[in-house]
Image (cartoon, rainbow, N blue to C red; front, side, top):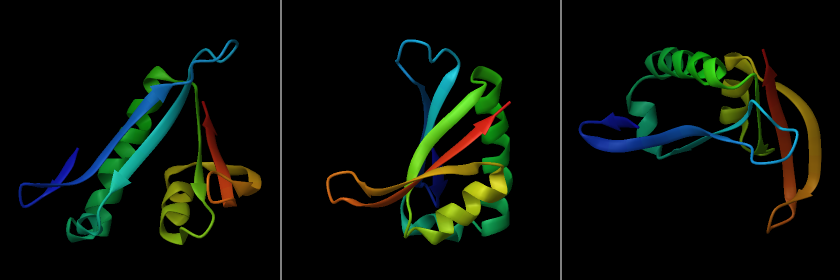
Length: 105
């Protein structure tokens, strides 16, 4: 968790992909409020880089999707080291475009 003035601004983690043949594959996730920007972009990015590396100590392969219209998270994911490997034009309940992101060690 990340906090701003004692209030939770973000929750994050990584879960194992529970699928046959998917050993060492993790699904990173992040939920945050607009308050996350009060931490400061540089400070948040530095901390995120640390946790990205930590996730890779347990999982060789990280993969998930992000809504294609979320430009700030896409820029941040690229900066962290993720590559965008697929486009899903009609994904999820609302059938909107999503991008798959991955990182392999």
